[in-house]
Image 1 (cartoon, rainbow over the protein chains, first blue to last red):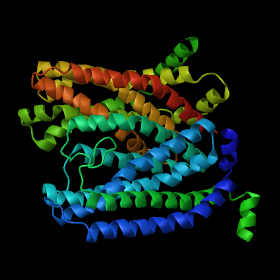
Image 2 (image 1 turned 90 degrees about the vertical axis):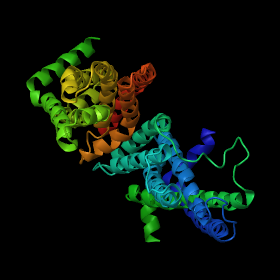
Image 3 (image 1 turned 60 degrees about the vertical axis):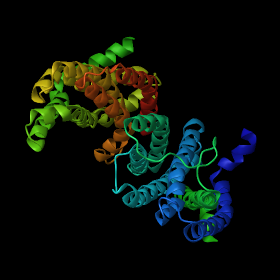
Image 4 (image 1 turned 180 degrees about the horizontal axis):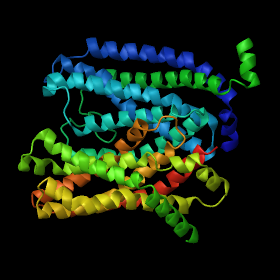
Length: 244
Length: 221
C-alpha cells in the first residue's frame, strides 16, 4: 500500500491534485449548502415546541459536528507527519487548524443565539458548550504555536505534536466536563438508534452536514495549495509554475 | 541511573544558585491567594465555599509562572543542543527536569497548604482533602507545564502561548481536584475523584516524557 501511496506524498503531486479537486468540491459544497439551508429554513414544518427558532439547527449542528470532525482530520494528519515525517502532512495540519477554529466559533455563536430564546440565556456553563469552548482553545493553541517560531518548519512540527497530544486529551476533557455539568439536549441523530427527529427535518439537516464537510475539504485544498507554494518557493517546479 | 542522578544534582545546584526561579512562583501563589479575600470580601463562609477553585487556580498560575523559564537557559547556552547531538537518550535529562520542577514548584505548594487552610478558613476534613489533591495533582501540573515549556522553548513569543497550550489540558485536573474538595466539605467520600486523579497522573507519567523528548528534538534542528 505504501508503494501506491508514496507518490502522493510529493508536494508537486498534491498541489496538482488539490488544484483539480478544488473547483468541483467548492461548487458542490456551495450548491449543497444552498439546497440544505433553503430547504431547511423555508420548506420544513415548524417544530411543535420550539416553533421557528429551531431552524438554526441547520447551521448549528453541521458546524458542531464538523468542528470535531475537522479536529480528528487534523490529528490524523499530525500523526502521519510525526511518524512518517511527511512534509505535506505537516503543512496540512497548519492548513486545517484555522478552518476548524472557524467551524467551532460558528457552532458556539449559533448555539448562543439558539440558547437565548430556548433557555433564556446566552451562555450557561453546560458540558457541551464548555467542551466546545475548550476545543476552540485547543485549535487556537495549535494556530498560535505554528506561528510562534521564526522557522516555519519547526512551527509546523510543534503544531503537529500538539494536535496529537490534544486528541489524546480530548476524550478525558470531554467526559470530565460531561460529568461536571450537563443541561444540553441529547444528540438527535445517532448511528445506533432511530433518529429522534422527523424525516422532513432530517433530510435538509443531513444535506447541510454533507455541505459543511465538502466545503471543509474545498477550503483545505485551497489552503494546502497556498502552503505548498509558500514552503516550496525555492524549488524549480514552483519557479516554472510562476513563470507560466 | 548514573546519568539521572548527575542531572538531578545539576538541576538542584542550579536551583540553589538561582533562588528567584522557584521562590517567585511560591510568593506569587501566596499573593494571589491573599488577593481573593480582598476581592470577594472577607466573609469566612464565602471563602470556604470558594476555596477549592481559588487554591487550584492559584496553583496553576504559579506553576505556569515557573514553567516559562524551565528550558530557556539550557536552550540559550546550548545544553539542550549538546544533549540532542550527543545521541544519548534524553530520557534521564527529562525525568530529572520533571522531578526537580515538582520539587521546586509543586512541593512548596503542598508544604504551604496549612497556611492556605488558615487564610481561607478551611476546616480539618477539607484540609486533608486539599493536601491529598495537591499531592496527586501537582506532579500532573508539573508534567503538563514541562511539556508546554519544551514545545515553546525556541518560540519567539512565549508567555501567553504557554498558557494557551496548557490551560485546556489542565481542565480535567481542575474539575476533579475541586470536586474532591467540595465533596470533603459536604462530608461525602471522595475516593473516586482521587482515583481518577491518580489514573490521570499515571497515564501522563507514561506518555508525557516521550512528548517532551520529541518536542525538545524538534526545537533543535
